[in-house]
Length: 366
View 1 (cartoon, rainbow, N blue to C red):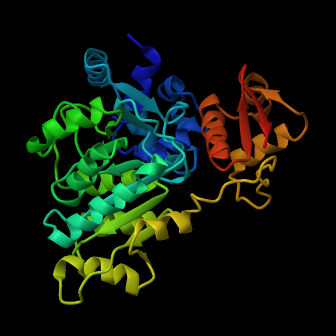
View 2 (cartoon, rainbow, N blue to C red):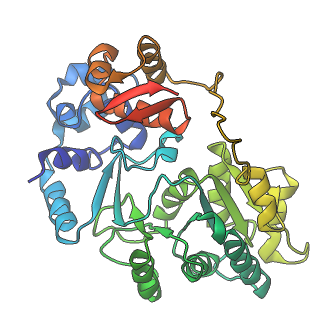
């Protein structure tokens, strides 16, 4: 039994402890230590308090975590705890990033170019054409395409990606013991086979209940560089995803449609209210995201001097300023942070191009 994984999964099972509270706890303790901490110490942590401290101390359902580990091992699923180097780094910048993800696939979740393509389940021919053309035109950039494996635009995005030899990830609103909708089972298998995969924060046995979909949508928005909306009504999951992406300060794009077409009402609303950039073709997306901006020979990336750092990130940057390279053990010792907090902060700094990882678990400022 993997004891570390046992406690990592158990954190997600504690009543009243969601991703935000888990992040707070992991800034103070290693996963196993959370369950061993004194009630009085837990109560004093800002954002935890007496009720959540009681939930932690009263927790005893480790059997469910053991069952999930058995499922993971049987089906060769990759658990990605928030401090895992393979965890999607872009998600770390989201305040409510999942504590653990379950992944079946081979695609690099930290690739240099990741987009989300979303839209209505009941698309028109226009929506189908725009989705397929967009992905075809982006194929030379080796983009990772994220969507929700739903009917409609989601499914079209996955299929177009496979057709153009692009990796594509389906983010699920349920456990990896099933595929919803069931009719996309074959598509899901093709995605895994062709260097893509399936990703979820829900453990096995979790059903695709209605309230899970907005929760799922934050992962779609958070792990992508840009979210592209292709046909959606004023209400629906795509609008929720677009709003979440805006909240995460991510780029949002939308294809416009006829003012009389209800299926484009959401896209037109996003554009009209400056919540999405009007998009008509792939080249506009490429230009805005700067994918064709190649550095001159011999040129170095200019260091970001004004990035906003969290308290933990600032501690690590200050340590790295003192030497050319610093080993991870020294960072853990001198920072006064838990190793989980250090790992999360370093991953975030790497994503912001502020820190570089070197062989031998050494780090330096970029």
